[in-house]
Length: 125
Length: 110
Image (tube, rainbow over all chains, first blue to last red; front, side, top):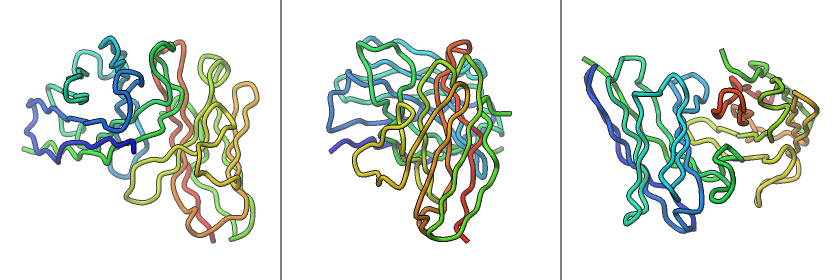
């Protein structure tokens, strides 16, 4: 059974960095793209970036470029999302979501068919 | 301001049909597949429709999708109280080179 299990809630101060993990199981890790999506409480979904576990390539939404880094550990089938220079407005629920497709398709969104449970990041002084 | 435009809310009575629209542009819906997601309160989004009109296994045929040009529509028939949720359209924007979502539509089953 396909699962994405994310790390636990985080509380950070403005200016800190946070690293959220997303452990994949039940499928071939390198064959499917992984997205990160965030949701501020009471608001809609915001796409942050896409990661290709096959070659480590990434594409980020412009507003997160330079502040978000997506990486992987193939040995543990885990994808990481690290965000630096945290601001109060980064307080949100962060999701990893597997794309329906992956290598060798173009690295775009074809539909996110499996989602993690979400990780709450709270930025507070 | 979302790249894709959805109505903030729709409502209908149990058993009835409802449609949710999603409007975009040539760089997103005009040239890429649309997906639809259902987010029940307090849960992660769930894929309902992919490639404009295909349903993942386990999604009942009460849910349907269509796309024409730069607009897409999600249809739900035989409404149930359990369908009360937020619904989002999503696609890829080839000009921005990013994924994009609509702002979401809250469905109320009266």
